[in-house]
Image (cartoon, rainbow, N blue to C red; front, side):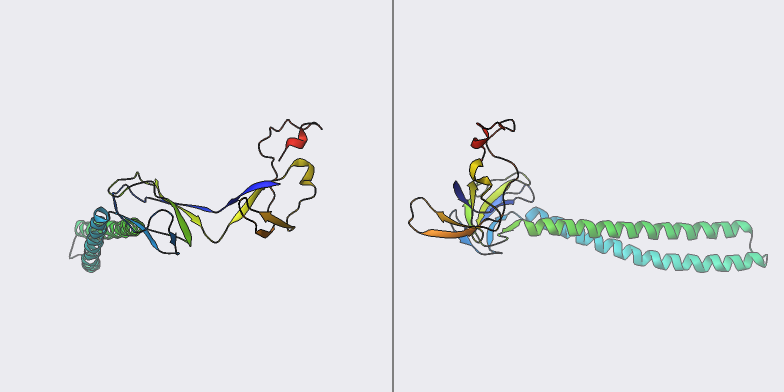
Length: 227
């Protein structure tokens, strides 16, 4: 049975369309988990973070003022209501106090929504800013760096391809006549072209679908070509 030795491929993408500021590694280098691969220009998103922080602070200040206004409106409404019962003030005065109270409540609610929006905007901008620093998620070898320093990759374009160093496996094609003899968990010996050493392995998965052959090749003569 023939096959190829494979490694898990890890595609690292650009979170936003920003120029590549610097590379920390070269193709072919081994990297550790968390190691810096490249840096996309963070200036734009630093400004967005600063703007979101300012918007959040402003919304918080408005809420503090709104609460004071609301408390004053509540007191005024309660006082006016008591005076209306004593017939010192008219119903119109009470309606005005009620309108002021409703306005204060609405303003507080709107500013609370603005604060929540500012918090979400800040979290989003901070997340993108953090991801402009592209790091290796696991130990791997740098297989490809398709862009150059100064280039501006599209958002979500692959800017680095890594091959995991801790998960080599063999993808083997099983001829149909041998399929019944192979099962998950069985041991196998692998030989690599160009090397004399033999490697011990275990079958961990068998595809339920044949490769390279159309589904209709099921007669006795052709099915032996399934793999």
